[in-house]
Amino acid sequence: MNSKGQPNATAIRRRLLRWYDAHRRALPWRAPRDGGAPDPYGVWVAEVMLVQTQVDTAIPYYRRFLERFPDVHALAAAELDDVLKVWEGLGYYARARNLHKAAALIVEEYGGELPRDEKSLRVLPGIGPYTAAAILSIVFDHPLLAIDGNVRRVLSRLYDLASPTESSLRRRGTELASQRAGDLNQAMMDLGSSICTSRAPRCDACPLKAICEARAHGTVNERPGRRPKRKRPHYDIAVGVVWRGDEILIAKRPPEGLLGGLWEFPGGKPQRGESFEAAVVREVREELGIEVEPGPKITAVDHAYSHFAITLHAFHCRYRTGTPKPLGCQEFAWVRPEGLDRYAFPAANRRVLERLTTEELNEE
Ligand code: SF4
Image 1: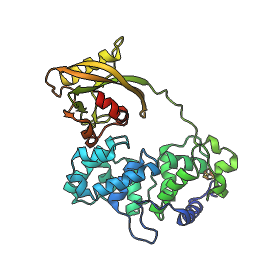
Image 2: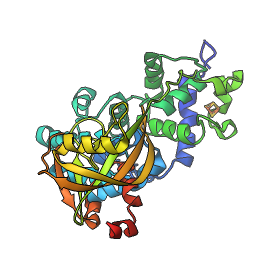
Image 3: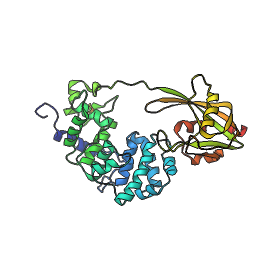
Image 4: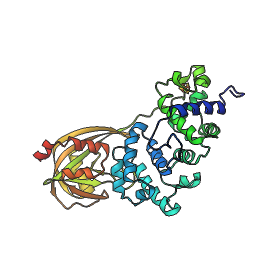
């Protein structure tokens, strides 16, 4: 304990690293246990994935990504469509677009080597303070702590802080990471995801239990203080699976913004008082300049994004007239159902596709 009665950095570090050395998870982007350096490219890709994704979900995506794009040169040379296809299902697609853009910059400006200083790293698309600190500590041993929600929670409990400021957490983090920074960061990540969890912390199994302030004060479940939850708005979206003979019309979203660069069934939000079917007809006209006739409903799919939720109402539609033009999309394609797998779709559209059973396809 220090003079304020709080656990000191040396004691925390010693306990945490001893625990990590014994219990560390063998993850594909980590350096092997018997020594050797981690692959900077692999750590970068993994940390970008882990910003919004749990470790266990990220592992198979990471393996596929590295198989397809084994180094920064391969990623820089790839088509964005291929990158998005490998990323399909992981969500938060700006991460994939930014990785792709940053790879090109790293090849052009740094000869394919990740920059080793925070300023240069932070200029690259998609690298914020968390990812920069994770890369710099794990790959280059900079004394920085990467602070995400998990680490914030561990520190808040360890020091019994109700509403810690970012700068106070950073100061404590820098002190903790003054030795074996990479291992310290990974130990914190493992502890936060496996023991000091949000809902059911397992204090009895925790290497820090003897020096944890929140545990001593009985405030574990109150730390950190909860931020008030905002209500997530909900939107209905109507889309058309537009058939012309045995082909379906799909449209590619604009390159930037939500789900940028992914393919989807055309459609949008109904206007006030407009039926879903009428909305599909209008949206397809506005987006592609063609007339369609709505048919039976295929399905309604619920999906939640970080700041809002949607219900996607999908309808079979028949193409009637007009020559499609990319008026409100990047491009479009007529594709036979068996060819749709080549394209990257957002999760809700993918679920509509799954509902297009062979039987339904044969009926069309
Ligand atoms: S003792 Fe409990 S609250 Fe404290 S760091 Fe460990 S798991 Fe978290």
